[in-house]
Structure formats: C-alpha cells, structure tokens
Image (tube, rainbow, N blue to C red; front, side):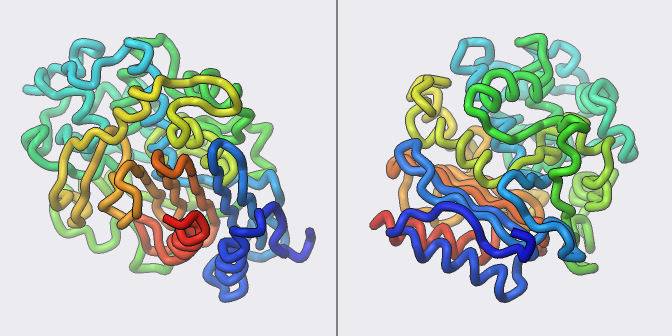
Length: 378
C-alpha cells in the first residue's frame, strides 16, 4: 500500500510478533523492513511495511529486497555446507588441497574450517586495496593467497568481515568450477524460489531498498584502534553508498554483498531448520546440516573485541542467548538477522533499510525473536 502500512501474513498465535514489528515502524526505529518465520518448513509469519527510501516516497512492497551485509555470510556458509555434504570439501583438510597457491607465506596448514570460523588469520588485506578491487575476484583472492596470516591461525577468531566470502568462495570455485553465487543460485535459491542474490542482475535494481547509514561516528570502522581492526574495517572501508551502485550489487561479495528480504532468508534457512529438507526436496543430509553446530572456537574476537562462540559458518546459541542449544545465527551490519533453531525446526529472518550501530542484531529483531520463542513455548 502507498502509505507504507504493515502487510502480510501472521498466524494468530504469533500476533505479538506482528505487534513488535509494527511498533518498530511506529516509533521510527525502522523506515522499511520485513520479517519472516518458518515452522516445520511452513511460513507462519511474513510481514513487510514502511518505505524503501529515506524520503518515504516508495512503499516497501512484498517483493522489495535490500543489501543485508553480513547476513550474506549465512548463504555463503550454507553453500559450503552443501558442497561439503556432497563430498567435494573436507572442512578438516588444508585449504591448499583445493587451492594450492594458498599455501604461500606459511599458510599450508590452514584448514577450510578456519575460513568458516574466522580463525584463519586473514581478516583483511595487508596491501592497500580500493572499492574497485572488491569487484575483481581474481585480485581479491590472489592477494589473500599470497599474504602471511595476521595472527597464528586457529588460535583465535578475528572477524573476516569482507574476506571470508572470497576465501570460502574460492574453495567452492576450485572444487565445483563455478562461482559461489552461481552454486548458491542454481542449487539453493532457484529450487526454492528464494529471492536472494549473491550478484544481483540489473533487471532487479528497481526493487532494491535504499540503505540508510547509521549516525555519523557509529559506522563500521569509526574509531578503529588496532592495526588489525584498521586492516579489517578500513581497507577499503565500508561505504553504505556503494550499495546503491550497479558495481556493488552485481559483484559477488559473498560475505557482505547479498540482496534479499526476510522471506528469502527464512525460506533458505528452513533447509537447516528441518534436517536438510525444504519444500519436499532434500538439499543436505541431516548430518551435513549438523556440521554447522560443530564448535570451532570461542573467546574474545580479535577484531570485534566481543565474546564469540563459533561453529562452521555461524554463531552458536550462547552468543545471542538463544534458548535452544542446537541453534545458529548470524547478522549483518546495521541490523539484519537470521536465526535457525534445529530443535524447534524454525527459522526467523529480519531485513531493514534503517541501519543501526550494530554487528550482532539489536532490539528491533530480538523483540520479534523473543515473541516467536514465547509463542512457540520455548
């Protein structure tokens, strides 16, 4: 509707979720947003509302999509889990088994699991790079293959904010012969009819909501203290304006460049929530899904300075106090969030355009998650 009012589906028992979604818009915490939840593979909440632009001239429609920054990492991780489930990747194997050039500068023992858990010591590029370099897959990956680790791999996590997607994506490319975005599209998104893109075609540009940056002084990279933090967050930096360009949208940046909405994120993650099956089709084995829960590393993240507990490509339940132990999550700069509960067989997702100063979700999405948990009796 032209007035930006809340639209969509809410099963009766989840009415408090809709109330929380509406409150975020009414208070001005959100400009435009979407929230979706699946249970046993069925959509039980699917909401959208507000506006797709800061000027509030374009209503947020059912098919509005938006850059979700690091929530893209969940799609990258799922693609790697799928490829591993088919026997093409062993997470315990050295990266160099699949990508021989990666062994340079003492990296021969770095495992694929280290890439998945942000512990490979490659959180950023030592060499100064530019925005344009992010759109050059060969350059971005070659520089990472050539450089020495920034700390001893496997000893600690350090958030691989942008690099993780290139690292995992290059392993996927080496074993499949296809880019990660292509594997994701062909093997996951298209079979599910999920409107999520790692490399958005120009034909979809008119549906993309305009991201509204966090307040000045609260943006990614502001006040970077350590050299590691500077390399990770300020080389080349994070400029929200780039997300409005064709170059950013069209590039495959599997750690930060994905475009979708809550429905597409929750639909995809119904695979993990339901033991590998979604819409009657088996994508992964149940064991392949549970690989994501395997604890890799805990402690204070060297880049974020926050306590983390990481599985293969996802944060584990304790990080966000998720009530079920067999739970996963990840989130995106500004506030997007994805949660998966394998015990309750449910997936939740939130996407928005008004960015907050957050890395791991905020009260907007967590209020809806808590309302879901209460309604489910978790």
